[in-house]
Image (tube, rainbow, N blue to C red; front, top):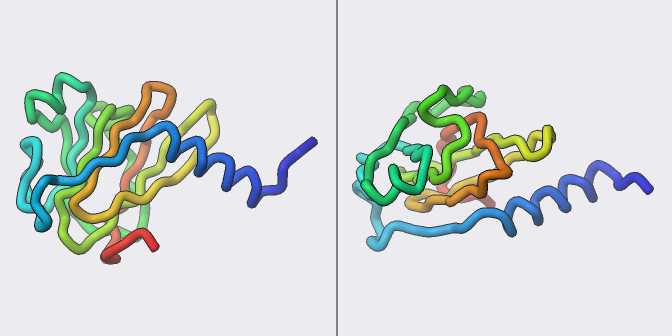
Length: 129
């Protein structure tokens, strides 16, 4: 039985939410966090990079398109958005299927190894709603 496009998208979203951990900076207003200077969106390839507060790549330009991630950000284990008023859209691959996820301002995600983050788009919107 094939699922409709909307049911597949909903199933994919559920798998994504179940597969990633959400965390926020301890302060209400982000300045910098885990070595990620405001107003950047930082990528950490490994847990060791995250723990040592050493981002391997950072993006800060608001765009209306996905920027393809390079070798220092593609497949990152952690992503953190230090921006106070801008959301971040991430594109990822899971088993060859493209999916998308939104990260709220001053929030980050941990990604499991079966997801490969491939693109980032920073948008001038203060929430994912």
